[in-house]
Image (cartoon, rainbow over all chains, first blue to last red; front, side, top):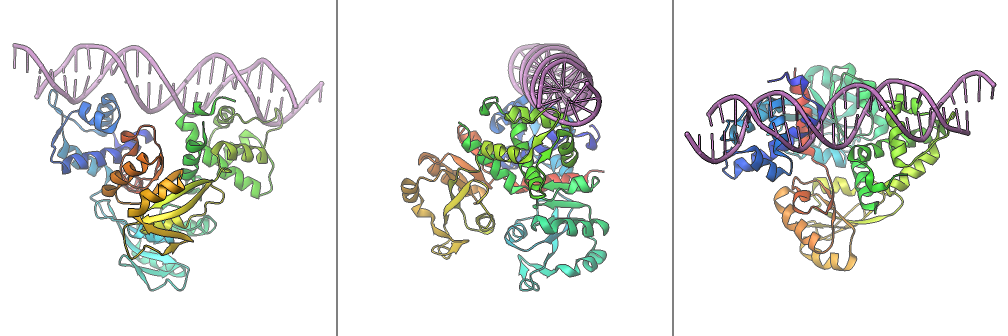
Length: 209
Length: 209
DNA sequence: TAGATTGTTAATCGATTAACAATC
DNA sequence: TAGATTGTTAATCGATTAACAATC
């Protein structure tokens, strides 16, 4: 197996998709799959699957195929799904509420607290997560030391919050704002969800022709 | 300018990001930018910018640079942001509510109605959008003929709804479910937002090393 | 004119696919 | 053993970068 850090971004992007399809097969009671059969289901080439699996350090059995349960468990480990990482939610508006209500049991995260500046929300809970005053975030982070922040706030307030969090040692972000964290903090670990960009791509697809 | 349909996916993915950075420059009052200066701001190479712009059919002036307002307006046209496309929202839960509350004025869409199966939601409104009974969707679509559906429902109910919509002529989807529309309906225009996949990638980034 | 910067061609790099020997 | 399928190497394809002539 290659060093994990050698995985290219193209590889990483496909990893969760493999996990999803293999979970489905597992639920269906399948425990043996060939690269050709999986390729058919996923709409990719069997070559790519074998190449990817080889990069991921996953092996099958020649003449037989791969074990679904084994693939699942190894991809789960690779993705770090079994290590619960603590997160805080910044912004308890519409997006924040939706994010708070996702299920995190099987995804390696746990939201410990939420923060908002809206006084009317403070003290309430979403999905069992207490909403605290954003002004208390420095104090909270110093004590609780969350590993990661889910950034569900508008772009204009993002730079300030990110700076504060980063200086307190929070360097991983699930970023729903348009603020470009990586260009400012190159060593931060960031996964962006840009709903606006996604929608514009749909607009493009619908407009052409 | 090349035929629009010749744009590769790598090109399309970058298009909204250019739009965002150029909007920012425009707000700052800049109306002249060189590929080198834009590259610096966006953290990419100037070669890529010139190549992309050339693919997009955008031109500058040799020895001078590009006009921000001109780029913005042409990328806006390319993305189809000025043609309002009608959409319906399927699912008025947490994600659906968040999606209903996004601003669509400048993104080329308008949500005409929302649908849910939860009787307690029916008749209410989110952000001025009426929530209708999901069982009336066939009738609604036949009359209103929306161009696009925003799919904010769990995966298990997605296949059935997509089939119904597709057969009624709705072939464009902003898909928040994990149901793989493209493999079933190859001519559908689909933009996926897979929050689970995104979170797993973050988990991967945080787990390695 | 001289300097700057585009637009384009060619070179490089990386990712995907094809082929097939290894082997279960 | 024969058939199936992996694992890997080589070939192809596409995307990114570098270079520079064209030209404002």
